[in-house]
Length: 222
Image 1 (tube, rainbow, N blue to C red):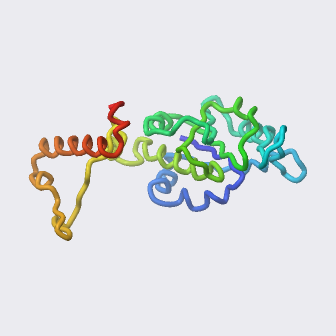
Image 2: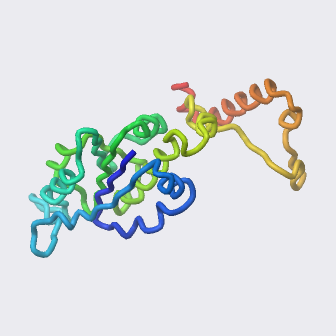
């Protein structure tokens, strides 16, 4: 998989892709990530990429030309162009699975008061990571990349993400490690029994109970 990131602040990504699972996936050539500065595509002598919006209002608006040229410079027939915006569809694990199968993803990170509306004609998908506002799309794009790359075959064991939260619209079951007794809180006996079928049933029951308590909205889809 190849991922191109279009941003006004490329230094925000320094070191993000060097650690942990993401770093190993890049080293193992399971994913190829490139960061592009949108200002490099501005035709303005001062590399200006924003201007005041027509009709008044506070804040600056990103102009279409630099973004159009930036997208065209990296776009291929296999590309999926994604705009990071609070107006996009809510990001879900199901979307992460779909994106992990793509050959090439282009992530467009906004800033200031947003994009010139005509930029939307250049993208295939608009995504939001939640009903809140960030200063730009960089942090959101990092979260999306992390969620996608770990699903690429071979990056981690398939069983690891199959049993995670949101698989089958259930939250993950409780997990425990040593010691068996910590400050009077003991590991459930069933997990020490060695009876795999009972453990499987217990984990499913706990997933349902936890989802019912914390995210009942998910059970309606399950």
